[in-house]
Amino acid sequence: MNDLQFKIDGAKLKEGVPLHIAVAALDHFQKIVDKSYIGVTGIKRISPKDREKYYINTTEIKHGSLLTNFDIVLQATQLGLPLVSPYGPQNIWEATKDTFNFLKTVCGAVQKGEQPAYEFHNQGDATVTIGDTTHNYHGTVIKIGKLSLKNFQDLAHLAGEGKLDQISAGKPDSDHKDIFIASEDASMFDVPTRLEQEIRSIKAEVFDFNKYKNAGKLSVSSPGQYIPEGEYSFSITGSQDCVNYIYSMLKPEVELNCLIELETSPFGGEKVHRLHVTGLAD
Image (tube, rainbow, N blue to C red; front, side, top):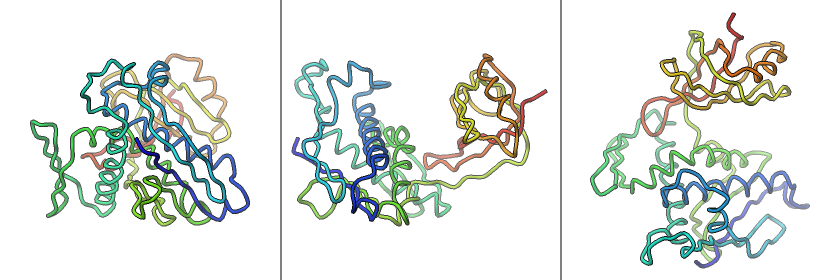
């Protein structure tokens, strides 16, 4: 496919490009396109062998802002795909562009208190109704949206006052970029959350903990609890001693008392946003 262009710009980049900003922006962008590849091809995750066959290739980097030309490399013959296949680089980028627009629409709706209604059809397409307006999307785009929402949120959060002025991607010669995030768009993919008032006891494995941030990640594998099985981020409330949480990582399972923060999902209903741990259960 023809070269595309990824750009970040802002006052912070005028005297050079801070490496941590450049790395974060490129990493979030890579993960977004990766999720499109996963959604289009139907694989569960990108393995080292997949990475040999598919990757983003940077062909030129310019400074002043951070501006890089790139293309999506996909060695279809090694993937064992049919000769006529919808899995080409252009399809992956189109899916990325469509996912950006889809998430912008549905996240904007829930921010206004409107819940998108989904109707899926036999051909894999879906109708999304928001108020009196109807939007049509391919089912793959909705699948990719669910996979990549966090990555789009992370990318957008790099923009804002005192941060980046713009983040964009698309054809270099086009005034209308396929992806465009301005400084005022930092929260464009954020969704409302609410904190439950009742403390819940949850059995989980703590597999990651940062003592400086008093936060970590845990895995819930025991069924029949207040939250579904899966991995969740958590933070410790108050001025608790973090030593007990560090030791808890040595145990296969611990019982934690938590306040559950729920988010309004742009895909319908609510889901767990974060756990706020009030203490280890006795």
